[in-house]
Image (tube, rainbow, N blue to C red):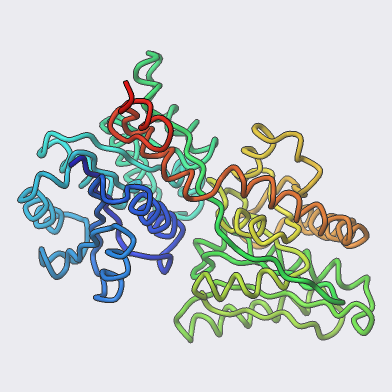
Length: 423
């Protein structure tokens, strides 16, 4: 039985988009396989409930802390993982890792088990890690070197969206067609989120990983606050009921209190009076989605964004989206779905290392002002955009596409499989 083993740090979205994408992809690969292929995923920790639920979806979920005594994918811990996984080579026809987090172990395991290795690229470290690691440039260079090495060694490289696919080509540097063909553009499945009928008001939501200053530099939640407050200042609060929610602050109470103090200072700077701007910690996706679909607008204003899963989720919920032009999602839509361009809004974000770029703040406020003036049409457009993309990018379809990209002769589905049997 042909098999795919995925390696991830966590099972679920708790530690970021890479793990959320991994769980969705693995689950739908298991469902698509229908028992014909062996689908497994090794993570550091997996609860009994998670293991059972994964099994119901056709996935063998492995807890490495329990089975191999490993607490990470780094250094000597990786040898414990490799020694454990090598015991059952049937698991290793294809090994799939995620960027620098599990990529090195995935490459090593595939080589030892004579299998093939696939690596997902979730970020281009050369683009923004230097900004995050200011004063510690050596950290950024080390991460870039590891990323470049696994890109060159893997049998398949999956860039999450066009920006990261281009980044993988740049890191590989090869000009031969055979080498370039192993680097593939992967678009995540669009989540299944129901829509919600909205009432009066002008609420907005910005969500993502805002748990520390390093992520804030890139994700720009403070820009969302400043731009929204600047826009709302021109409205009558009693008439338009403005409200903004920021989801994804630190889980540490002391850090979150400091972040909320900064939010209050921004509101005082950009809005004349009291306005409901709530900053809350990370929420499970299903709960965040309930808040999202009740919002009039969604904001994804990252200075750099490899793809932009939170923007993808806003589209899935039928919520009008304002995003940065630098996002891989924006480029994907403009290149592959140019006929849908008027159904969402994008602006360039210049960013700044310390504080906010005044031009960005004004651009966000201006964009929201225009969106508010066309709210009814925008909501209709957002619903149409959702319908168009859901039909093409369901997780069921994207999981099958991924498996065919690994080996179209091994992984066959539907009519293609029937034709083979008939022949």
